[in-house]
Length: 169
Image 1 (cartoon, one colour):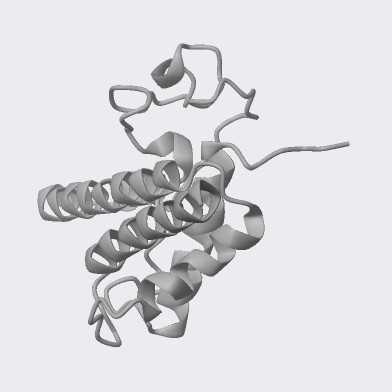
Image 2 (image 1 turned 135 degrees about the vertical axis):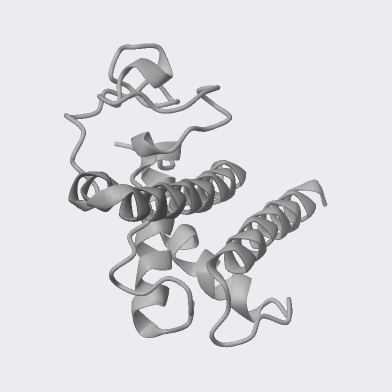
């Protein structure tokens, strides 16, 4: 039976794991293993139009599903949750808020890249970070995560354009 391409949630998580691995390997200098990108439901997105709810359900119609309507399990605590609960004092809380905002901004950029990769197979998604870095975008090693995510979105757009060019003639 044909299963079809991955949902936006699945695309986000595949790309998220690849980006985290690049951070662990030192390709992304500002994403060490201690910094985790937020999970799909922890990011406010264009598809849902607002910040993610604390329970991860109300942001996308309140049914617990993702932007594509698929049912999701209960929301897992993320490292950004730990940053909020482990911080002590006003200075640490402000630093945690700044870190959380930065991680959510990176998550939104990753979500845009996942949306751009609509229709891609899992194998194509795993290849996309390599294409982004090898595309000649002039990315240094190590490079910044935001810079890499912009290149990732561009690589997805180029791949989509190449595919439509192939099918058009």
